[in-house]
Amino acid sequence: MLRVVAILAVVVQHATNTGPHDHPELGGLPWAFTLLIGANSILIISAYFVCVTLARRPPIYFLKHRLARLIPVYLVAVVLTFAAIKLVAPAGWKAVQASDILPNMMLMQPWVGVPYIDFSYWTLTIQIPAFIAAAALAGSGLVRGRGVPVLAWLIILVPLGLRWFLDDPFVARIFGALVLHHAHFFAVGIVIWLWSTRRIGVVHALALLGASAYAQVIQLGHDIPSSIGVGVMVVLMCFAALGPDWDIAPIRALRKPIRWLAGISYGVYLVNQELGYILARRLLDVGVGPWPRFVLVVAAAITFGWVLTRFVEQPIYNALTAAVPPLRRAARVQMLRTMRLALAVRLGWAVRTGVAGQIQSGSLGASPDRALASPRPVNHASTVIASPRTAPTEESLVSFTIHSR
Image 1 (cartoon, rainbow, N blue to C red):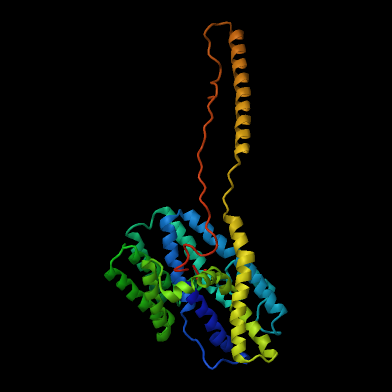
Image 2 (cartoon, rainbow, N blue to C red):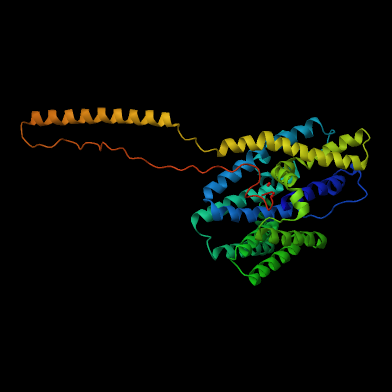
């Protein structure tokens, strides 16, 4: 549910605040949702579920499934958004070129100085490196037990320390490219997991959250309302992490639509901003008023997000993560028969060769030149772990992971 709240906060904030700010001709509604809590909450949720997954699954499993879910549909979204900018948006709508597509696909925008085709993609430039680093640290065994709280402290303190060296262009480039001024949100997700699993106590958790709040003020400015909004989301995440799922009548009645929206949340995130702005402009051109325009933009984001999830994300994810199906029984039997026949032929050939060698040698009791292969084949048991569906399971606080998903 909290993922749904976060993604809707992103969509509404873009439609009512960022859109009119970036394109003043769109005008505005009588109200604007200005709280920057959606994407930041997605980062926290994402970090929490990184910990949950790595505690249960091997790092390679985590990384394979996470990247299979995030990367392919992102690449499609980049191409679709660029095409919409060039074919549907008014002339001069946004200064992006065909040469910007590849850096955007490779998430190299801040490294090479090209514009984001859709600025929402900034969360992936911090999430993908964070996922790779988490898998590497977990696989190496460097971060276990007490090392996890230490890692949370480092995620908060190292970016704060680097701020002293931002006058150096090299440090500033790394700091900006990795979006380190948002790194403390990952620490908050780790803290929620540590506290909910009783790996740290309340005092330690509060100290980490207090340091994160300080980092929030230093790194992102004195936007107190947004900081309070993120704080409220953190409190709700703590309650949700304790489980079981909230059994409250309104939430219970909305369980199915909540799960459905959570399942398409990453697709909604990928298409809501730039495509939403273009749609709002075209609706304005045909005389659609502010409120109907707002409703249509939100509905379009959900619809496009569902299409992207249903026809791009899910099929590709399932194909990339599907286990090799076990052989049918008849095929296994036939394979064993073929192996036995091949083994018998090999054994007969070896015996004949050995006997001929002994006869030619003319000496009794001579041993063959080479040992015979064992007639008993060695079987290797294998297990297949069922792949999770793309629909939110372990990625839901009742289910950016921002689906950053």
